Length: 593
Image 1 (cartoon, one colour):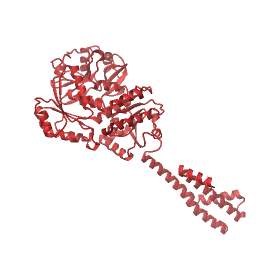
Image 2: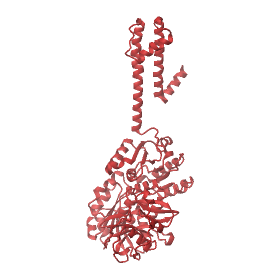
Image 3: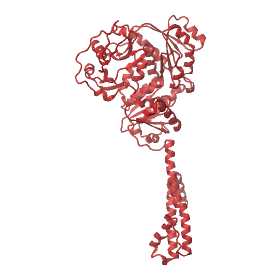
Image 4: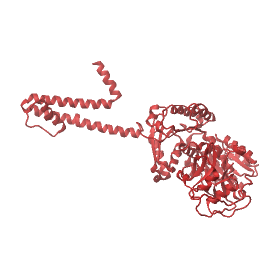
């Protein structure tokens, strides 16, 4: 008896629902058998045999509670009433309650984000921080149906509320091809990872579990542990694994010790957001127009980058009229287009001639004086990029660092500077998330008079996209939302990991020459790019692109221009007849070494 009690206690705690169902079934079976036997024994003449009594008494009373047998003796009458009342509670009521409870449990599990999913070819995001929202939002512009699953320790309902609000703000009607499933669980649990079908994910993005840069070592260690578990999970997809790292040492550790040891050098991509954003901010200081260009190029919205097998850039340019080939690198051709299907669209007859123009021999840069207010983890990469640019272009960029934003410090720092070309305000990333960008907004107010006096461009960095609207209308030339940029880069890499080398190359200035020199995006003055002349209007985008490329022997690829403050990246049918006429104030967007 004690063994049975122990067994029952164990089973009850392991699966109480199953024990309850078995109990309901066993009790009603006994009620049926016992009541039928009593009815047969009390009135044997009314039933031919015991089997007939089984079907005419107990089971009938249980399945048809309204059936009362008035023809039987007193025992049968009392017994039928007893069985009817008992079965209404134990059978009908018990089964209904059990089914209702089961449905309620299914709904509750779904609301809590637990239980096994059946999904494949999805984007799996592990952990939650401020980059996750922008990351999900950019998939709205992907032309493919995208399923995103988020697994984090955050409250499921809170995350879902944030996602819904973000998608609504961006246009609810566009979200039809984007499905977002939020799960609350442990990213270090193999069971929870299995529940979100990690083995069938096409891409896995491991975010830092927090935005707090005051805990960099702990955050990176958490990411490494997460990655070690993920690579040990069996997978049928060989997914791209994107890892957010705070420190350079973490990036090297991931590359050298994990990616190499698991033979996934091309599939595990560690990203250090501070480095990438520092280099992008540096380019924006030098060429302000590239910021608006990158906002489109690093997103699924508008023109974006694709890859194809290495080939002749010139031949591709002559044959294709819906995409722009950029350059070859490591067996891959990088191409700019607004849709992957447009990579295959060709002209009926390839271009055989081009309009000759004079390009090059331009003054790429003039001496520039920059004031930087504030400091954060990106500052050293900004300074490093600018120094590399100086070597590459034989130019001079003077940088003045101002660590505080009080009036006295600002006035003392700039009083001896005769000319200020650009003012950069960095957002402190070593504070709590609630205080993000407060220092930027305060400094922005303090430097208005200085910017007007020197006619200086104001460039600000924001960490929280919600502060964008607050900062407008204060003479800002460029606003760089770091987390949005990083998220967009991650979304691009989740679809094509080979774009990583392209992003790094475009954002990295170098002082190499010849074949070893890297390609970057530049915004050149029209008067400089066309050797001191304003060219005659071009009759189409393709004429402009081909003329500049072939006239420079393949050195310059024009991808767009900036006119009256509006940036245009070429896309669609490049042969569409249109007049492209430049003014001397316009800029040409060029990819070149």
